[in-house]
Length: 223
Image 1 (cartoon, rainbow, N blue to C red):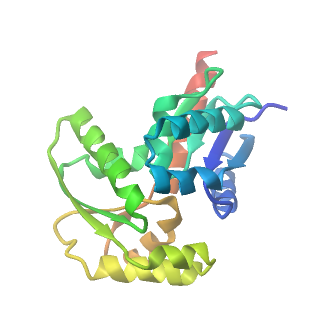
Image 2 (spheres, helix red, strand yellow):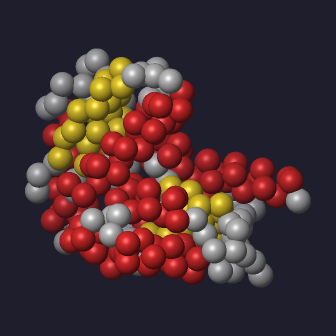
């Protein structure tokens, strides 16, 4: 039976997260996942715009959508731009999980604090934020915050320590006048921790899944 939405991940830890979001937001839709950890590793080593890597990202998007999904979502911010630009062989809509978050972050212009645990994520996400701002004609000022030492926690499976490091780093930053954007899908639980401290932060998973579901329903309605 064909799937409705497919996800391309660069870590298996994301599969249960996105399954849960789909059960909450669209339990009637069929979902599939493809995990390609090598794509993120190579993007960190070679850059996400490396032509051979871009070709592999496009192939991975095609593999994810091979069972008939109308929307294929890349959940990795580092390769999301390449995935969105590359498209999906066969005509499915190629989406990046953080597009909806970026659109919401720049809605009113002003300062954006972009937070990442990976240096390689900053440039693609900053470019995404700027493109969203340009589309609506607003000016933004992007400040960058790399949470040094957080990523090894994630790689070792110490997710509690990972989220704590991100939460503490953001809480110590000057965020009073702007919007906080958590660049990586893996950082989403930090948004809840920050809310407990009175800081509003945007994370991509729920916003991105809601957008993907809307895209799918729009495509089905046009058939």
